[in-house]
Image (cartoon, rainbow, N blue to C red; front, side, top):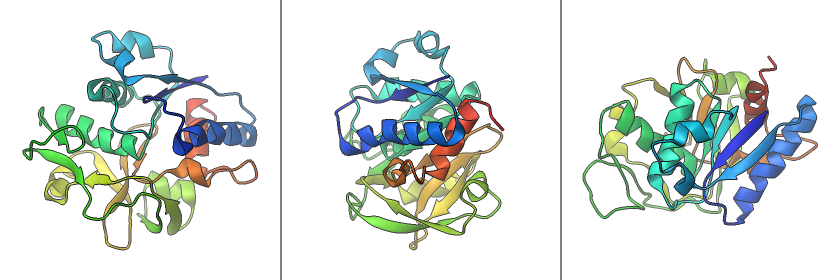
Length: 231
């Protein structure tokens, strides 16, 4: 089995932790999930499905801004439409919101503030206060896939982001199949999941930073389990 990690590799701490967390969960589950990084520019083509067709899971990675927003959105769309296990962390969270707004909600010009100065349809905006380098509590929503995975009402998480959901579009985002999996103490959305999908969970935080061989991250472990179809 192989995971496509979609993003532009910059050798950052959060990116390196992705590979480590996959290894942690592999050992815990007794599997040998492989992974490969795919630059966003590689997927900025009408043939992106052919590039991803043998992929068993997709991780929309950290590292915004990407060289090609369109390439990252193509990968997310492929996972969503083809029932491929998908996890999006930090930048992956942000870009999943844009993909969903454009291709499900019909806002083809949905924007991300890191790529434009256009204030119209700005679904992802600069936070009033950056969360980069901070740690906080996320309350898990009951009766969600996330609650089953974590088995607890709240978790401590690490953030490396300065962008998040524009609250002006919150109700619109929640009008479809994306539901809230977790919120912080200010009731800001920090985790979401897609209904009627084998595994499609996105986090504004970086779960890979909380993983080790002794304690693999539960969310990443469940992602790897779904990729390997070991239920």
